[in-house]
Image (cartoon, rainbow, N blue to C red; front, side):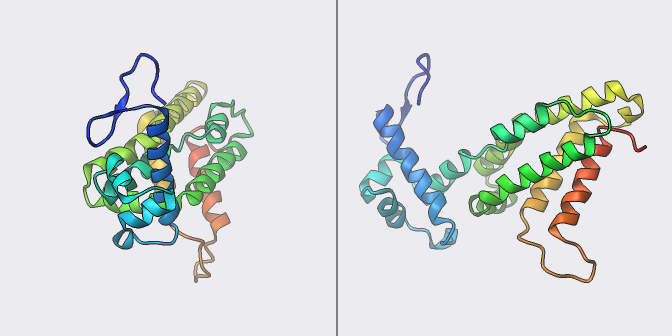
Length: 216
């Protein structure tokens, strides 16, 4: 919904969109996200999205210019700063419990990312191919969390001067880059190195905690 002091959003022909129009556009974006669970981007068609959203093909073009435009709307609805993740990062991580707090954060992040993996897979590919709108969507999805993690590292650096060799925002960005990459994998299959989903979570959690508390 638009805030009272903001001009209404506009559809593809320049008409102002209010509640009903915004809800229909959102329904199309949600239908796109749902279809990406079973349909590749190359096989996704306007008519399929429209049918799944319970509207007509002309209705689709009232809100989106093409399939990629609808996919972008599905991508833009995702923020990694979910209430659960924000609550974990904003909480105090007391001495002696930093690693367990870090593990809660890493697990919550990967759990949510996995739930949105079908849409995020498309975002990752298009961003890597240099699509500017999808690169920006990827940046915005983690922007608030980047700020929160930077503040978390700064707080712990104030407690432990030994940690100050790491630039806080760079440390936060490295954490998120690692989680994004790890989150793009499916369940880990048996391998010669005995790497499991749990062992990867433990490893990343240790990396996070080492930025917030010196080793004993």
